[in-house]
Image (tube, each protein chain N blue to C red):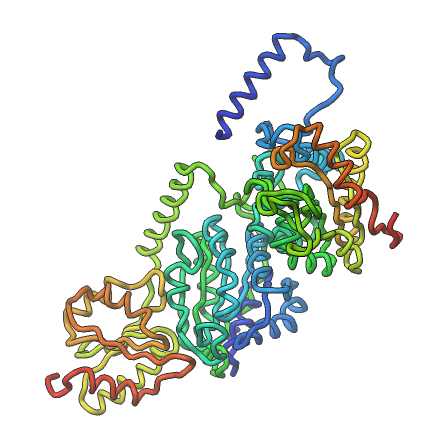
Length: 274
Length: 356
């Protein structure tokens, strides 16, 4: 579906809403920030990407840095992130988003730069770039979406796939003796002196969404103060490739993902984890 | 004021990079071109504020270039053969996204880890693609240390004129040897972001995004058609070559880069013996001077293509000559540089010299 058809479809829904006359000021409780475009997202129902995009967009809008922010999209489900953020963006090669972000930040040090990367992108093919970007203490924000699976290519095993977890390339469950262990890359990079702030969040409950947004806001503030690299992991779900309903996937996330990837700060400006 | 200096090829190139007002260099050490990174690390930032960053790999370097070139800044990287191989995915992205930047390959002998001695074994990689998909680099081949300097300026001019990556295809000997060079004056760094650059979206324009992803085949074909049309225009406008004693020549040596210089010496030696030899040197390898070479084919007994590889530019020479006359080949590989006398001997061997 191209941009034009999507916008037409959007207009259609707008017309329905208008007919029902509920679009009145007193009913307004929630607005789309100007940092998001009108293009409907392609993400599956219940997927965490949409919420993650939104909180980043809200943070940029609230800080008033839309004109000064450049984002880098990865290869993966969020490859089209540049369609949704109403800011200048670059779509990087698989795994290289943090290198591209480094290039941008180094020649435009006064701008805000962030990369948005999935687990395959950041913690498998791009592990080298991730670690070295963090180790150099590049003054950027890396948002790391961890759903334990390759989404765009159709549910293959990711570096973060849990032990025993089934995927199309671990059809009998991840056998750690054969396939190795899930990589807790945020714990790993939190040990690097170049990293100023590393935290693990989720967007599965309203409270967690608020905390994740706060982490993004803090990261941009630290970037303004030139504090170094900020790393925000967002543990999320993948209903389609986990083969669950959105509700089931959220429950599974709480019962399986979060015990392995516990939420909280791994490195804070005070130098300590939570 | 113009300045004369005795400089190593790699250092002369690095000096030109500073003087041209380059904004950023991202690279990784590899012989025989590490002096470029070393020289820039010492000189660039203190003199012009140019960013110099040693990346963790060539893959990271080229993707830093991808990001930085997208801002419209003047950026470059350099490497040697195995390192350039690692960069190919990124180069394909850069070509598709039409980002201007300068790439330098100081070629060493391959394949594999090969040798650190000079070679021209990356002609195919540079000129015919290298990475995936239908794209072209503008490729320029210096033959002197002076041209290592001049081609930096030319390279950036062409890159920004055509929104296309430009590669300087040198070799290990050009990088390492010292010659007298005339340096151009320092050009002040300046920044006027192009309309397409990702520098932050002002309120009064639509967002810019840089991508090489176009999911609909029709859209992707349009991108390809646009690129091909651009390459065709580049072929019409940017061909550069040098002719040396070709006017009365019976035999023309075709060679690029360092080998063309050696061939000039061969031509002199041949003429002392009464054999009329000329040299045709493509300066741009893409676009290749097919038509000029084709015209020359009308008046000669034959061509001898000489390269430091197994015969790569040879294919383009044959395409240009198009069967009009004979095209012979002499190549050395693995880091061996052919000597003028050796080439002369080949002329005598391949062509019946008495008949000339």
